[in-house]
Image (cartoon, rainbow, N blue to C red):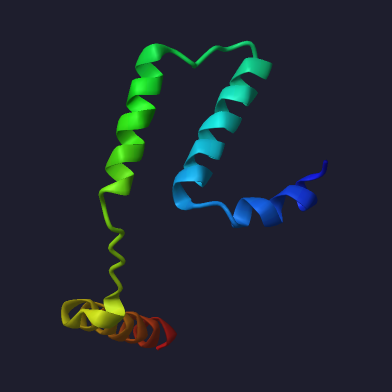
Length: 89
């Protein structure tokens, strides 16, 4: 089975299942390289991280919705334009 055949199915996975897939692939690649990353402690950490991720909400911040961010970007652009004018003179 090729990657192009698998990707549509991967896109349909839940967030948690995608994380499990990443973990599975990491362990498989490590095994192929001769490393064994799978221990009881790692499994406990994985479960803890998955539980943490399930209990949180993603917060996306954008300077477009922040007055301070908008002013900072505007100031940065104005300063860059002024510096460019000075260099061209």
